[in-house]
Each structure stands twice: as C-alpha cells, then as structure tokens.
Length: 137
Ligand SMILES: [Zn+2]
Image (cartoon, rainbow, N blue to C red; front, top):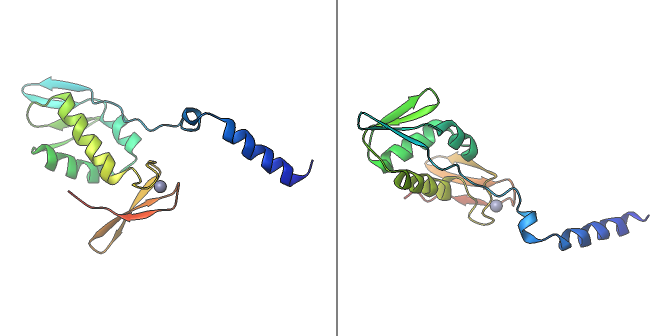
C-alpha cells in the first residue's frame, strides 16, 4: 500500500470517530472528600486531587488557602484546613485554580506547565503549543 494512501485512510478513520471518543481522556478533578474533626476540615483525598492537577503542592496550597481565607497544612495524605468548610465551597476553589493554572485557555487541555519569567507566570501548553500569560485573580 502506498504510504500516502495509508495516511489518508488514517485521517478518514479518525474523522469517523465520534467527538466523545476522541475526548475519552477527559480531564476530571476528583471531588473533595471531607472529614470534619473538632471544627477543622481535612481533605482526605488531597493527594489524588493534586496528582490529577499535576501542579506543585506548595503552589496550589498557597493559592488555595489564600482564597479559602484560612490556614492549613499537609498532614500525611490529607490537607488540613483550620475551620469548617463545605465540600461545594472547596470544590469551587479547586475549580477556579484549575481554570487559571492548569487548563490551557486555547484548547482547554490540562497538558500544561507553569513557566516563570521575572514576575510573570505563563501557562505553556504541550498539547497545542500555546503560551499564555496567567492572569492571577
Ligand atoms: Zn492548548
């Protein structure tokens, strides 16, 4: 078989794949699993969340705690938060972080890296090659 024909066939085959299959590697952040103990909160699946986000723990925690308006720290596999929180509130904070620091604003894929240049942060996408300045909120 001619190699050009072969590539053409591949392209055609790919076009026939439904959109939802192409996106089978859809990015989903695990929902917060919360344990309240003596009026403090523990995110018990924190490791799973941070592994999915694939970001530096310190970077995430710094922004997350600031936006949650509390203090906290990693305790083993868990993230300890001072005060009582609701799952929805924490999920929302994680979602906001993800939009700003994980998902490419062009192709919406999570295959990105944070690059620092002086005081500016950039999100470099390895999927589509875009490089956008991160606008911190
Ligand atoms: Zn991209």
